[in-house]
Image 1 (cartoon, rainbow over the protein chains, first blue to last red):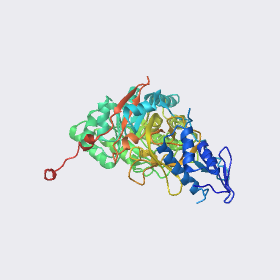
Image 2 (image 1 turned 45 degrees about the horizontal axis):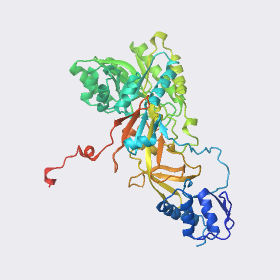
Image 3 (image 1 turned 180 degrees about the vertical axis):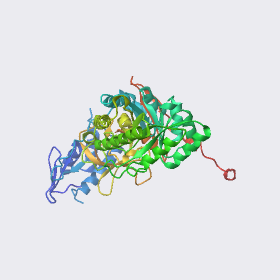
Length: 80
Length: 448
């Protein structure tokens, strides 16, 4: 999963898609994941970082990851 | 140390005119009810579970009584059994001094079982069985006649058993609120009510002691009660002047709203519904100015139900699952549905999380656990991010849910009363398969 190249993000979770004009807010973890994605990190690397930093089990993270990717896809933010 | 986790989520920002009716999302968790922790209630009684606050019930009753008694000298409340007829609840109201208002034979027997004196039971409703009527006559209960067939039946019964029935008639009229509730009782405007009164006056064994009306439910207009009270007063004065039959009481029924928010309302119920004080003002002033002599003012009876118990009831439930719908909306499946939360059909119930959570919220559809598409608790609600197993607390569910609930797909859960010392008591056990099958009979030929 790769974020579209033109998507602008800020540290506090604001997302802007210049192609559509849509803007979004995100919570802390969502913003963090976006930062990693923009830096080109792989899915496995990002998940490991989240597991290391947060109180969450892998099965929970896997579930939430899939849902998050679905949200990004629905929001037209992913480069499919 | 690791940080607290919250599932990642984004929310689209919409531009447009600001909603001047917009209200703040309620993030505050409800971790306890009357001093008892929600997690302890779930651990002890399971999930879902209805919880009633005795303190709030008594507070509501005393406040409502005070609202009327500070305006009118003779006031009596009669607890509306159909609103919540769990015996523990009824007994709290009876301890406070409330009579009983029942609408069926089994409710009548429940009231007797709860120790209510026969003459303090008001028997309403269109379906009174002959045996129930005989019992009510013998107990000197106040029988509110609903239709002419019932009136003629009562005349026959009283003659047969040679006992006098204490009766009132139920009157319906145009109060300016439409549609008119004219299916109950006798109409005022077309003279039907006066005809019924005359028939009672001519009957040997019938004593007309009062007049009754029940103009609607969840009434948002105090003016309608003023109109109703004025018309009842006119009828009562006519009874006195033309029939020399002064009446002992006027019963204005129920119908006062709770502060729940009706579906489609712009503003929350707490900001829009009139208070009991407002209703008391409208009703009391009307009766006081109707023309009764001071020493002949009738007793004012009120059969309030919803307004006295709705905000004393909570439903605790748990999240079963989260999912995303085809249009991208978040959906949360809870372990309670419309089968036990009947009022979610017409209220946007306030729902709180039961533990501290992040400030980030998302729009969610709340579904119940039933295998039915209509099992929707809230079509749209902003809630913090919920996870499987998290508890939620639904507010203001004390009225009607514990009588209109149905056993469908899932059993009905436990009901708990928290007393004034913050101690919880089981007042209705959760149902089980044995209870469910207790009334079933399998014909011999189908037994293996």
